[in-house]
Length: 126
Length: 238
Image 1 (cartoon, helix red, strand yellow):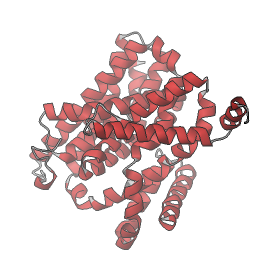
Image 2 (cartoon, chains in turn cyan, blue; image 1 turned 180 degrees about the vertical axis):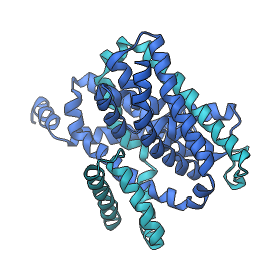
Image 3 (cartoon, each protein chain N blue to C red; image 1 turned 30 degrees about the horizontal axis):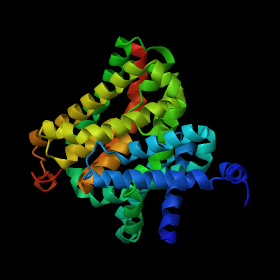
């Protein structure tokens, strides 16, 4: 687990250095993600070695957002001041963006004949 | 016995107390989420944030002090983002086949997220720095903060709006896409990743691995696209 974590941190570190050195629009961890995918393609054994640790971290991805989430409290005065406008903008645009994005994806998948039957939701799933 | 006030002032200075509180709040949130049969309204992030906000208020602790302890948890966001490479790698054959649907979902989802948020906010008289802070709210927090800085927004306000967007998206995605009868896990995951970044992705992983992988890709692609379109739309509506 420690060796897997060291590798993951090393990819993040290289990603961070590249992001800053090349002035990329992507943050370091996202660059590290892209590098790790490329490394797994070149050496599939790497994916098997990292999978248990990666799955462990990803199964609690929600936890890592909690400290930043508490930061909302620090902005309570502004959020309350412009509350209705900001709330409706966030809720309205999120509903519209999810619906429009999913429907566009689905329509183009049907149109280009790339619907994947193994990736369809069953009736019993939630 | 030592005076409880002395123990408190000792604990309030170190990271142990608020690190423990963050983990316990999440364990409680996760337990309630499971008790609610993993229904999306019982979002574990939302429950943990509310519990911690009450605790900070009750003990008169400010966010800076809290964050000194909680930063260790916050730091793990980076490695966890790198780990999204594994589900992406495992789904690579699926991803290659879905290139055109992904591009369609990306441009439509990202465009609608930025334009509709700014149009609605303007209708309520919001302008200037607050409007600019709102524009990148669907992108992952570190990128959103960078975009907000460039277009004259307030970075910390942006961080709060990003979080609210993520939590709302994670709560609304399942009932919304069920009502629209979207059964494709790829479309469901991708759309929530584009509109609600990492918190939407965390929700997608709770439901389905393929949805989670596509959500991670949607989040990454949207980070790049929003960096391009947010300044244009803000210039046009702001």
